[in-house]
Image 1 (spheres, one colour):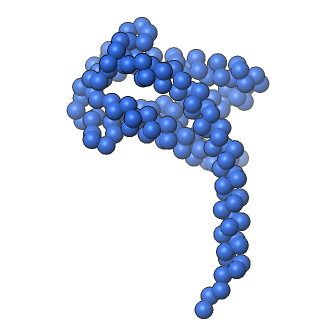
Image 2 (cartoon, helix red, strand yellow):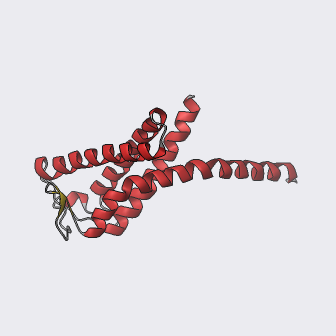
Image 3 (tube, one colour):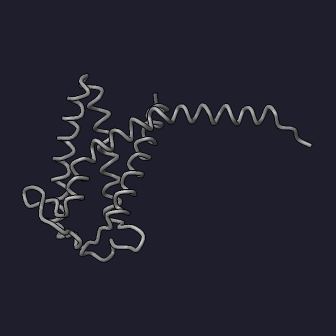
Length: 162
């Protein structure tokens, strides 16, 4: 059981890492706190998306064990994600005073989630993208592992050492 949890955790991290890096690198966040802004990637946004994505996938996995309907799993997971997003946005924007300088456009809801239409679409679709990527990794990873093991075993069996 411990091994299965470790494997699932690594896949959650992989999915979260891929999505957060891809999004943050392409959106090019710029915050009013200069320490967060680097030339390569915005550290603040990247870390928050990475941790948030991982937490979301943990919640998604938990909801899947309790609810049978895929539709309900998706709706419940998305609602939990959105409430968490609003909490993080409120805390960052109103409590900590961290503002996104490149927010071209208005707030999405409740004076929160400032950005352009592309940002709003991504923020709303993130749970779906995250679930799809995670499910893809869950399906593909065992196939790749099996292929890799077969290839390395074949190499070891056929290798001649002089």
